[in-house]
Structure formats: C-alpha cells, structure tokens
Image (cartoon, rainbow, N blue to C red; front, side, top):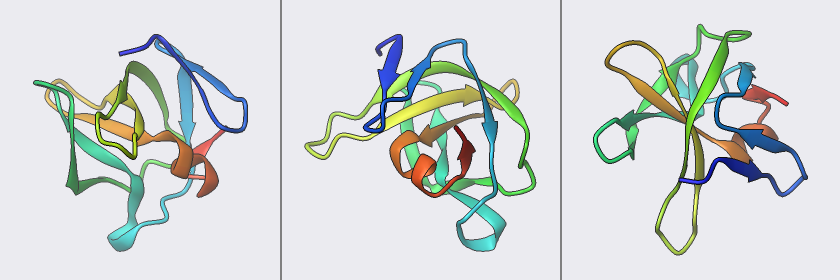
Length: 101
C-alpha cells in the first residue's frame, strides 16, 4: 500500500505515525469504524470491531490499505498485539471522532 494518505479534509497520515483513539461510537461499546484485519492479505473483517475501552490509547500506523472495491475504503492498519491487527477506516472515523485528529 501507499506510505502516505491525505484525507478529504487535507490531513496527512504516514506509516509509522502515531494516532490517538477517540471515543467509540458503535454498538456494544465498540468502535464502528475500527475493524479486525486479517494479517495474511490485509483484508478487513467487518464482523469484528475494536473494543471501546481503548479511548486515548496511541496506536502506530503499520500499513495503509486501500480496498479494491469501486467505493474505495482507506484503512490505517495498526498492530494490537502479536496476533491481532485492526484497521481504522479513516474518513468516517475522523467524522465520527473515533480518532483524535
């Protein structure tokens, strides 16, 4: 994937950059726009959302993934622990304030 991504509002995100998580806005106290990523092929799993008890936590962008669908989605992927990775769907996450700019 690309090394940088510029959002529609002009914010630039880079691989290696830290992002601070905001409050979760999804169901069951989970983040609506942060989903589990399969580390083999970097595919989003929309059935598993990141837990909401992580506000103010800093995460480091490991990879920027642009999906191949017509309505492209851009994810900033971070490593949660040895086995789990999650992707922040950056544009809606910003709007929902799930991440602190």
